[in-house]
Amino acid sequence: MFIYIVTVYVKDSGIDLFIDATSELIRHTSYEPQNYRFDFLKIIDSTNSFILYEAYFSEDSLEEHHRTEHYKKWKSIVDPIMQKAREHIRCSAISPADHQKW
Image (cartoon, rainbow, N blue to C red; front, side, top):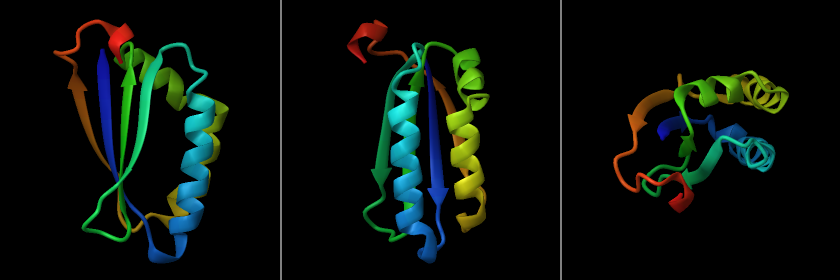
């Protein structure tokens, strides 16, 4: 199990657009067979910071996701409204080890 955690910093003027675009991305990503989880979180202590928590079968599965049309569309919408570069953390899951529990 491969976990990808992304912290996103959005310009104040782009928050609504970011939420809409990311919600659409998640709808499409949920149909990817090797995507087990995609959580979209708002950081409470910041008006413009978000976390994307994604679980995939493997790192290759994430790379496949990055080649999809829905990801490319999302990136083209959100890149111009980023306050600064996204921060990424790559993890391997220890527990639960059974992907069906995700």
